Length: 105
Image (tube, rainbow, N blue to C red; front, side, top):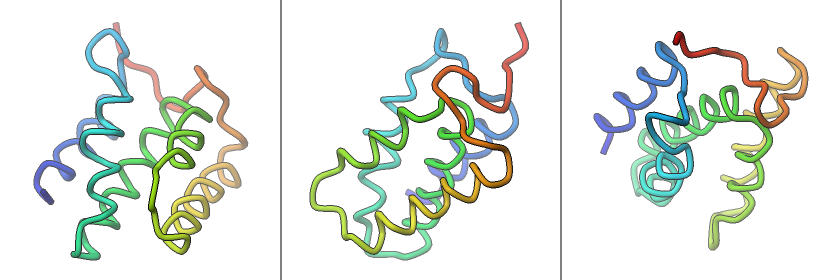
């Protein structure tokens, strides 16, 4: 699980996100969200970083997706929101469609 998250994190950070290539919903719901329930803290922390990278690229939709995760421990939800808040403090609020990185065409 760690290697999948690490690869996805590197792809998002180095190449950005192109909605024509893949869906941020798939990354979130198939990879990142289930990893938040993993017993290993390292996996959960890496998942938060993938979510943070998606947030930087996609915007506020990611906050709504985090809030839609059922049975997520409140402390973990707060940790995710704190990470997203730190991005907002550093770069200003990220709206849908105006992420921080652009994919080269």
